[in-house]
Image (cartoon, rainbow, N blue to C red; front, side, top):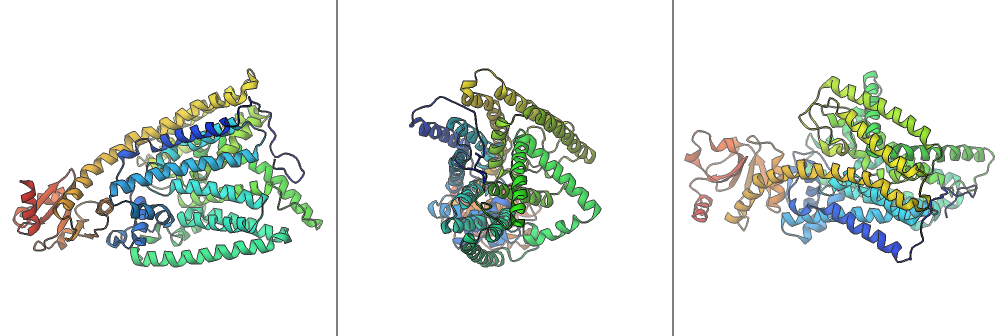
Amino acid sequence: MYAEGNKKTIVSDNIKGISGAKWWKWVFPGLLSVILFLVMSKDSQYFNQLLLYDDEFGYWAASAYLTGTDWRSVTSGIPYYSYGYGFLILTPIRLLFSSPDMMYFAALIVNSLLIVGSFWIARYVTGKLFEEMHWAAIDTICFLVMLYPSNIVFAHIAWAECLLVFMFWVFVWTSLRVITKPSVLNHIGIAAVAMGLYVVHQRSIAVAIATWMVMVWCFFADKGRRKKVAVFAVVFVALAVAHMFIKTDLVDTYYFNNIRVDVNNMGGQVEKITDIFSLDGFWELLQSIIGKWFYLFVATLMAAWWGAEFLFRKMGPYLKESFSQIKQHKKEGLVENLSLWFTWLLLAFGGNFMVCAIYMKFGMRNDTLVYGRYNEYMIGIYFIIGVIAFLKDEKWLFKTMVYFTVALLCGWFVQSILDGLNLTAYQAYHSICTSLFLEKGSSVKGGIMAYTMMGLAVSTFAMLLVKAKPWRQFDWVRIGIALCPVIILFHVTAYTMISGTMMEKQNLRIINITYLVDKINQIDPEASKRVYYCSDTESRYWSESFQFHLKDTPLTVTTSSEIDPDSDDFYIVGNDFVHTVGFDEEFYCIKESYQFAVIVNADGELAQKAKELGE
């Protein structure tokens, strides 16, 4: 059992349960893993299209870059996206599967497996932290946390979020080993994981900074660790230098340093940071902080606040004791003390939260005020700690009343801001837990307060069921029963979005894109002809899906004014272009979809072949 510096148990537990056979301790989590995989992968076979521009394409473009495929004409018009997910996950998939449909499906299956892997790491870490808690209760709580709505939704999208969830759990496990088993290998591991997270997505820079802060502290607080910390520094810097070279080449080769590159790059955030020091900028930041903290409060049914309070309670006494010992020239136990690990987690989360608050200050969409996506990849460990902290708190009723009051005030504040601006733009992917109450194109009046009341009602029901006195001997069963309405709510929230918004987009893209690309491949199976996309006839964003499905055939983004009617190539245009005056004299429409058309030279070989295949 892990212990604090004062040799007391970190978290004692009076939760008792029936002792089952040892084999059941493996069967039960195995069964939960199967259920988790089925929930995450449900309906994945229906998805074969990019749902999010430019994000998904940016990640697939990294795999195209690594495999030497020319997607440069399309990537030259999008922001830079980190390449970690593209290199680690999408490149192997790209090499294993030739069909874009199978590539996309495989990516979704990997997403599901990453969440299952996160579940096993979570139950291991939680079991080490709370050894006296019944193993079935730990498994059930970890299972619930993995069913968090964003995990389910993001498992159905080929982007970096599920990998970030998994890698952060690897970070949680590795950082715990650095504190409890400070070997050279663990210090190398934490350097690789911290830098790896940054390579997968730059928003995780706070994790790297928190890690450096802890390593510097270990260096000065424990002479015995200095060589290990030095190894950490060397490995981290070496990986950072390698990353710099790879990123520079990727940006120069694939993005041509276009004006949109810095949208997601560090250089593009300087202005947002400097704005904080103005009165208006500081007020906007404060609004952003309140909105995002409110979202996490209700989305985790108060668990995020319980978890944060627990970490603060561990950090405060640790810092006080540490500075007291330093004054007395005593440093024994400062590095081995597990409260340092809790402080590490708090620094990582606090830093990441501020990255989100600064980068996603309230803009022209409703979701930016209650933006959750940037924080949700790391919410799992804090969610779990929060649930267990609540289960063990003797002053839970008073704290709950305080939290409820604060939540209502924050909800009222957020609702007032959104009502005053009267915006209707909303992207559910960034604030999934509000998607039942906010809708793109609709007014948000009353939506935030409805969201607040729903969260408070469900959390109240679960808390009262757990804290009620009867049938105490079956506490681990009661925890499972109490979490059932939470699991149901999470599932409904996620699959309402998947079966609605996402499936609607999927079907539209099949009609618009897949049918046309299939026709191009049928007429020119050897891909000997060039394919152009006229961005002035339809949105540039659609070129990304066409390029993804064309796979190894480069798509050239151009304009209708640059079409050469004498060249025998494919041109993808918006439907309206087909109905322009004089079109039939120069072009032949091979296939027309709901929104697009594929056209060729009317007198060329492609037109003739298309007519023959059509007969």
